[in-house]
Each structure stands twice: as C-alpha cells, then as structure tokens.
Length: 173
Ligand code: AR6
Image 1 (tube, rainbow, N blue to C red):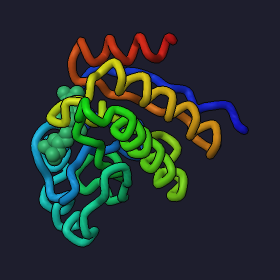
Image 2: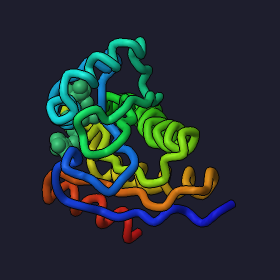
Image 3: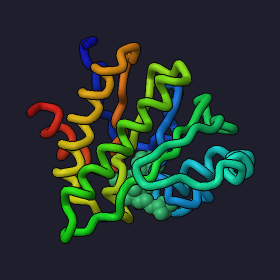
Image 4: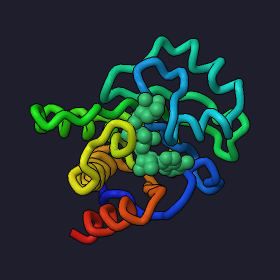
C-alpha cells in the first residue's frame, strides 16, 4: 500500500480552480444538469458539457463518469451521484456516499489524473448530514488513494463556513 494522498481544504467555488486535473460534480442520475454545484459547473463549462453528458446514458448512485472540462479552466469533470439522505437507511446511504468518492477516484486513476477536487457531495439538496459526510469522505479518500497510489493531491472545496468547519474537524481526527 502507498501512502494516502495529501488532502487540502479550500473555501469557495470549485469552478474557479485552475491547479487540478479534474473537478468532481455532485450530479443526479440524468447527468443533464441541476442546481447547486451541478448548476454552477454547467454554467461555467458552457453548452458543450451538456452535449457531451447527453451521450453518457446517465449515472447510477455511487458510480462516476468522465467528461472534458469544455470552457472550464480544468481539463476534466468527473460526474458522480451521491445518495439522497434517508435516516431510515443510514448504513445504505453511507455505503453509497463512500462509493461516490471511491468510484470518482478510480475513474481519475484510470485516466492518469492525479490532482482531483471534490465538493461536499450530497450535503446540499440531498441533505446528507455534513459531519457524517465529512468523516466518510476523508476516510474513503485516504483508503482509496492509498490502495491505488499515484495521486499528488486531493482538494476538498467547501462552499460555506459550516461545511468547511465540518471537514476541518474530520481531517484532524
Ligand atoms: N463550488 C463548491 N461547492 C458548491 C458550489 C460551488 N460552486 N455550489 C454549491 N456548492 P449540492 P447534492 C456546495 O446541492 O447535495 C443538484 O441539483 C453546496 O453548498 O450541489 O449532492 C444536482 O443536479 C453543498 O455544500 O449537491 C442533484 O440533483 C455541496 O456543494 C442534487 O443537486 C453539495 O450541494 C445533488 O445534491
């Protein structure tokens, strides 16, 4: 097993990043756009991204698919679909969220992308509790980058102060 990749946290808008190979989109099954970070990525990438997404046939929860970056400053977007939180099935939702991070990193690895930025998947419209999501995200990134090797940096781009604080706590644990 390799060492796990360095993880850094940033506040702000993931579409503004220039120093990674790929940004991850918290999309939905259709891959045809939506609100939140998905809407921001499609707005910044332009209509070419939607055109490419139409060829992909959607994406299952916990899976990930790659496109180009189009008008974004980065070369690639990895589209993943996190779970919609339901407190009746927490273990199933945990497994689906971990899978979204793991599959995104596997797609990056298969395509030689070593610097990857994630938003906080599922903690907006999909209402996954942020402290729980942050712990799962950090654990899964550590495990997967250590298993696969070859990653230079994983950046977590957090949009608001509460979300940033949750990831800061999870990273320090
Ligand atoms: N950069 C970084 N983070 C952002 C940005 C941005 N530009 N904009 C919002 N966030 P959400 P989900 C944060 O709702 O919960 C969409 O409609 C946001 O504050 O974007 O996985 C899709 O099409 C929150 O912390 O994604 C799906 O239908 C985090 O990103 C659904 O929402 C995730 O919030 C997916 O819901």
